[in-house]
Amino acid sequence: MWHGDGQAAFLKPDGTEGAEGDPGVVPVLRVALAKGQRHFVYQEFNMQDAPAKLHIKVEVFASVDFKRSTHASDYQTDDWTPMPNADFLIRLMPDYYERTSSLKPGERVTAQVVWNSPMTADDHSVYFMVPPGDGVVYLKNPSVTPGS
Image (cartoon, rainbow, N blue to C red; front, top):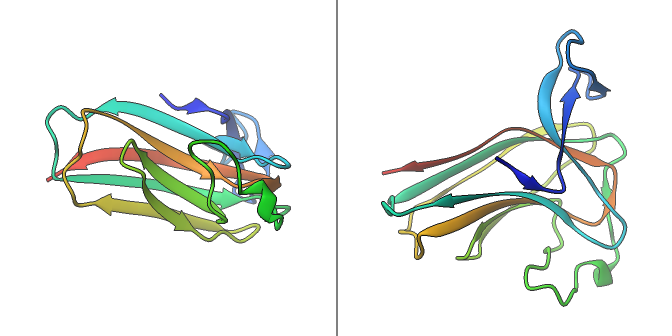
């Protein structure tokens, strides 16, 4: 289950929001950007078996009005997990592994990463983060899969 600032929504093939039952819609997580702060969704999981790899993948669509903030002060916070100056971020906690991705308004990208090192703790969280700014980022098919 995903927690945080995301809301369930449905996305039409043309990139606009629709309703369940509309032709061609797909379920997504909707994460709106906000002035002066980053937003995120996250999932917690237990890694007791300590897999050698962790595969994280998500399809990301930025709305046509997507524009991240250009104010450096929006990225410099006292928060223990500040957002780097990036369009999209995958963060694995508590290890602070990060992977950024570039987004373009109205385009879809697949953001993914495979971490090949052993996990240092049993309990982990994966965060998908969006920067301060305008617009919406839609997340489709987010997955976190342990591997060998």
